Length: 555
Image 1 (cartoon, rainbow, N blue to C red):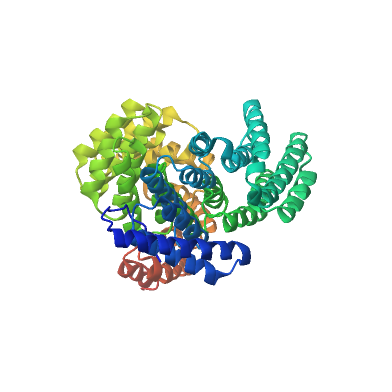
Image 2 (image 1 turned 30 degrees about the horizontal axis):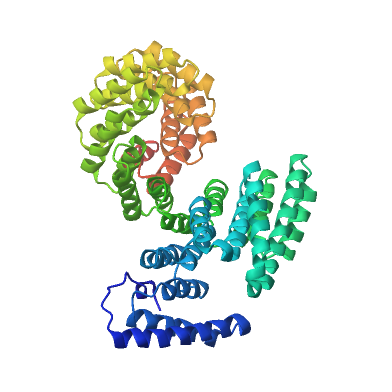
């Protein structure tokens, strides 16, 4: 069986077919009754088969639709949304059929659409009049479930009492339902009691006692999902993350369509278990079934696929997010980033531009300008566009330190040293405690032959970040090649090597300094280390190192 079996009726019923439909419907009712008594799957399948036959013979029979929906949902052949639609079909066929409205309300209650369910139950009550015991009692049960799962108001409690008491009185006309109903109500009252006491304990922060109470409630009621949900919330509050996951998973075992818990589980997994990407994706894909907040869900899925380095699916997810909300700057920015990872740069530029145009926040948009500028400069070689984009970002946020560095870098790439130095100095003015601008500015100043200024800049970079091996190496080069002070230079090269034992260039430079000082053996060792490392790093021309090594032993 599949969800496609239940379709909108096409009315074309002959007298003969109508009679066959009645026979099939009666057979279905008998099998249905046997199933309710014996709980035998054979009776269930027989009832479904005869209800389907009845619909085929006479598509205008409302009873077949809502009863078939009930049985197929119980067997897991259709989802809650399909069950609701089929019950609505029954209502459209017989707007004054009390049971059609009651079944529709029942499934809406299961989907936690309490407002719509209440409307359907009230319609059934209006039609049933003195025979409305069942819809009244089911409505009271729905209100109690709403109170249990949400924060019920005083009006909700009053409505519950009214429909419960009036329905109980009217049960005198509906004795067969008494036993089954009170069994359900007894369970709901237990839920209500556990829930009320648990909330009291939580209010006074008696979390261990509340957790033990909820464990007992999960075992003693037929609504374990409610209490595992609460236990999961307590575990999360106490930072017991594994227990949180276990509780939320148990809720979804009982009720796979609990949207609130799906969101909670996805959030916990995404926040605290970044390696558990597949389960998080599964949660979001299930959330898509609710047809709510689809743009946000696709957005989250896109980031999860990026985490998995699944470029194709990340682009697809972000595209769907943008389709849901074309003017959302964050969706456009993420789609542009996904396009960049997929090396689809023209598409990336289009969506970065869109995000910048929407400009929800100047600081955020300036960061997007930096991303766009890097594509122009580093990928497309369009220096003019890159500079213009970086400058636009600086206008949006004059305090964006990284944009000044990026602007300096693009000028350095063009060997426009004056503009590069200005950009780096602007960055230093903005944040004099960040070493990066001093290091970059030191390179530009050295290239400009401003040796003293370059020395000051590199010394400051090392003062701010003594662990920066590159600054130590570059400062050593200034002493070796600028001031011809090989002894001072060697100290900085050795410090760079100590910080990074795999730093090929530092070994090479230490060899040069040692050679300059006449330390042949030391120089040979440094050159040999550079040769060995260079086979991996490929940073230098090996022939140059070999030449220098051989020159150490020439007479």
